[in-house]
Image (cartoon, rainbow, N blue to C red; front, side, top):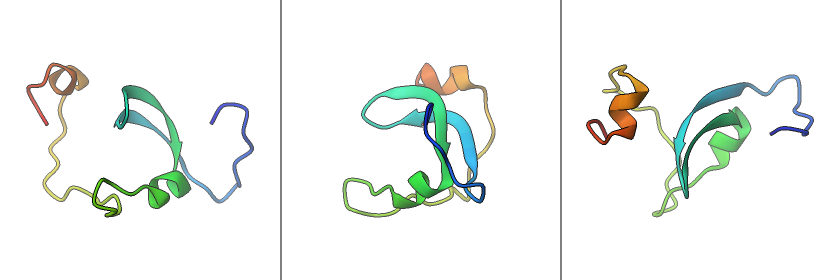
Length: 63
């Protein structure tokens, strides 16, 4: 989103994303709401998410 104007009402997040590539970066709430997975399902909140270190995710210990 660098170089883009985002509306004042849009929330901007920074996080780890595993899409076509795994990367840390910024993304907006409106982008997140528009995403669809392989089966065209929207992104949902993981009700069973437990915080962990990023290194646990990138090493494959956590999925």
